[in-house]
Image (cartoon, rainbow, N blue to C red; front, side, top):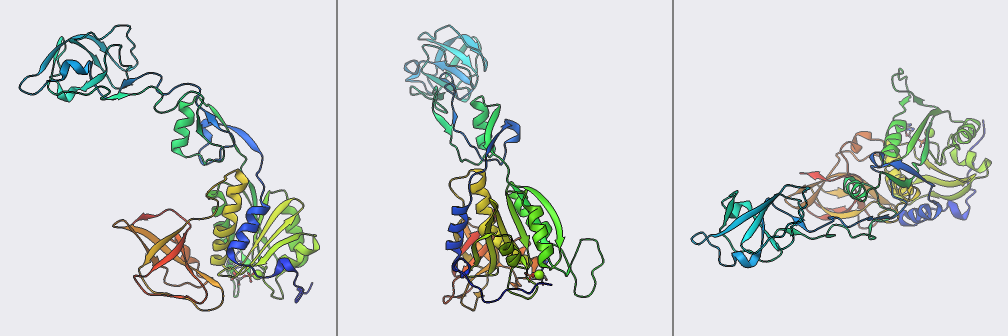
Length: 421
Ligand code: AMP
Ligand code: MG
């Protein structure tokens, strides 16, 4: 068995701060190539082209209401006591187009979405009329333009309506459809390989002997990567030898990004860093001044990126949110919002941290009466996987200023959506 290497610290291996580590990650990640996908399969993907409106939407001034197209000057003095009576000269359901003109003293019945006929300059919604068929009584005055949606108020021909780098959500899909795009050019999904190192690990469903631990990281990490849009290859458990670790890394290099958990510290059986060194990997960083998750190795190897995450389940997931999620966002082509957002939230319980590293504490952030409230998980140990259940935030406790009372406001990194309290 190979012994672990102690005391060989190169500049890239010095402990750095979280922001510096995140910057090195973003600097190292390139954009993956793009592919064309059908519109219906584009949800969650990142746009790699600008989408340009091929025509004006709406294509003509049209009615925003069901009612009557008319001339505002005709109803200037309309009231409940003195309704204006207009002859109904036509009927325009949605989609109907008329060549006719609304002459003074007349109106056309019009449904929402139908183009406004010539001559009319406003639409009286049916509620302020008697709803008549041959003639209609209008009870209120209207100003020109009322209830008319203007041609091109949504998109103008030639205008960029979706920008490259946008993550495609429901709103973007609707706009792409309106712009007649049945296919979109999007970033390829990053292929992410995941394996777990540890002689103590057993698969889910196997009996757990004394000293053994169920390989849960494999599932949580794969799930995080999938949620971030990756195409995940789960590669199972790797024993604590340098040879096995080297083989696992080589086998994983078909992926764009390799994630491993465990074996990345300086223990006698931590072989990830040694294996990477043997393979000639370039270390971009190794230790980050944070808790949980200090030992995180980030390397470049044969054109691929490798993240060796700590084995403790919480450290592993926290490192993912801080470093790998931003890397995946950049790889798919996002250009803004790469790092997780930081908000300020009122703490529902006190938090205290000791030591010289920044501490990230799991909290559940909810919106209570318009304010963000963060409830800390009861146990904050880096091995307490249940502290990640329901956690959507990481409260930041800087070294030195490490005491918050209940009711204090603390900075919180958001790692999931905020629910109502
Ligand atoms: P290591 O970073 O390899 O020193 O692992 C630290 C601790 O994390 C181990 O003692 C295990 O209890 C735990 N651990 C390591 N790998 C996993 C895993 N794949 N799933 C769950 N827990 C793990
Ligand atoms: Mg280990």
